[in-house]
Image (tube, rainbow, N blue to C red):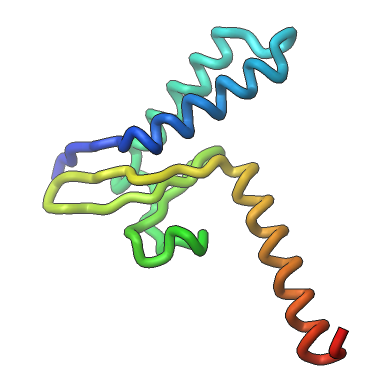
Length: 119
């Protein structure tokens, strides 16, 4: 079944600003061509949802209960499906996912220390 895709302004703004920030930070080594290539790959990845990317339940707490999650090697996409329309609601770059995991691990360690050792 062919799908129609809608990318929310929020999702596209996150993708665009991520690569704009990379270009600003690495202006002497990150070319305009590389930025365009990265942007193209991020949007092409969005169109692979339900057509090559696995449907998963969200692992990001703020995404729980809001739809499904799919990921490429660089981007995680939060989306819903209504009939034949896939709406991409939010995105998160993979390097930010790792930061989220680290924060979660810190919270779990703190919780265990408090619970078992009253620290």
